[in-house]
Amino acid sequence: MINFDEFSKVELVVGTVLEAEEVPGSEKLIKQIVDFGELGRRQILSGIRKWYKPSQLVGKQFVYVTNLEPRMMMGFESNGMLLATDT
Image (cartoon, rainbow, N blue to C red; front, side, top):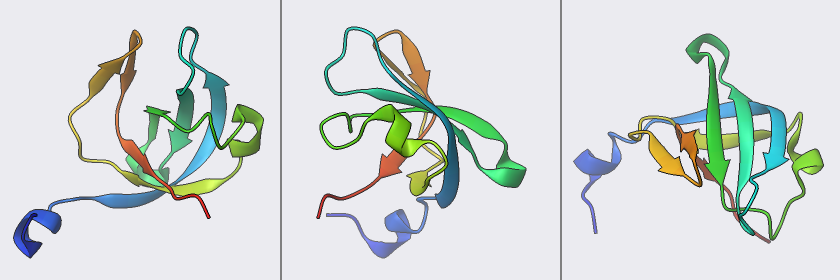
């Protein structure tokens, strides 16, 4: 559990997916290039291949956590985290 002060540090930003492709060698990851407007563009990897095809993501908007430290995944740097749910 985290308290409200910790939660308030999380930066949630809506971004538009410009490009999306499967990550070679991964069954889960999709690499996205996301436009955050004035904040610029970022590469973000998300484990959502079970629910989405890359072509379904292009042009869509999602909420992302944008203030996480960059993380290497399958040889690619990810600069954020996609927040999504299945319904």
